[in-house]
Length: 434
Length: 176
Image (cartoon, chains in turn blue, orange):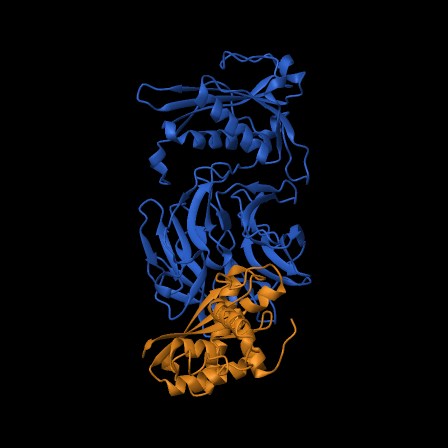
């Protein structure tokens, strides 16, 4: 499913439209580094022609809305009825309803059965086209085309990469709490196209994507032996990672995809190891009589953040990729765990336990600038959208019976429930398709 | 949670934490009511010892010895009440040397998933170490941690969390 050529997705810029002006030249612009921004009013018209075209434009609008940075205008307020997507819109009609940006599109079926999806993004107040693109794909990938269009609009207006054409792997949970069934599952970032990746009664936990989105590393209790595994998404092929003399857990890929980093449990202690996936050699990085776990690489691969209770309770530490210079970075009240380095490199997200509450927060890699994004009965396990702008995590409210997935903006605003069929935990966001 | 220290009472607590045993106790309680007799106050008197549970059986171990111990929050220290249970386990295992055991370590849900896997392992290791110190050969014991993934009590307060912070000794087949 994820192999690049599988979708035969072809992006062709409209010729001669003077496209892709830099965001600095555009009048319509969102500076997303200003904290809580006022969402940009945008008109996303029904793509022409027919049901599938309309569904695609609806997904575009929904993506933009869920980001919290755009406010799609109610279609009932539209004055101009677009009939020719190639013609210049009547800007006055859009300005009067305060649509600062306008999206118009068309979806047609090619002779070979493929869909052709075209769209234009207009700056209504400048009276200029900001973007015009077309895509070809198989009809069953219609949601994906919509996400790609939404990403293009997001990037053109915010100046930052979008994250809508991404997926989430997670643990789908069903059944009562004391006999819970857990399966790995994958879905689009908006909760659609969910499907199970495993189906057994063995406990499976903590799935994480490889950088090329084709593999997942996770932990399974198969054969009553808790170990780290690799799963090829396209073939379903599975293998144990390494041959360790004890439980291995808390796996993640290195940014180059060449290594898996994880914890090995021996008696009462957990230490951090890497395994090179090509040479199969293992390297021990920490050596303490404590629990060292939840390692996560910096995006350049030079450093690793992890949690350890070597000082008495769980705190965050940073070390070099070779295990050198292990330095504690968290010093606030309570305990800190599940650190994850932002894809931008500038922040580390974590779970914090304090005063009987569980919070999701971020801090800089040197431990300064701690900021709590959300607090409650139980929030755990943040994961970053590939643009480093949005986090997803799982939350269980007291008495709720099980956890659900939520996303939240880095500012702490725009918290959104991600709809899943049953309970869900351990979300991990995929990288963007290159 | 208040703790009652008489051996029979603490054994009853252990029983009450085990759903199967709880059902047994309930049945006996009903029987006791029907015959209008006071319930006997120790396990042997309940008929759960030599009578109901064949000596050396799984049931004998679970009912008369106690198959689980409990831990304080974020701790793997073997408490005094747990030592008493493990001492009985060690004596029983010495008497029935055909059993291998698996010690399951568990954590409550008031922690993060990965850490709790390690915490459960630490509790299982501490339990194994204690049993070894009481003469149970290491080659009869294996450990596994389930972290917070297999709670026995499902409410969202301390009365349940304290039951989920546990190490359970599971009897396996002969040898290992």
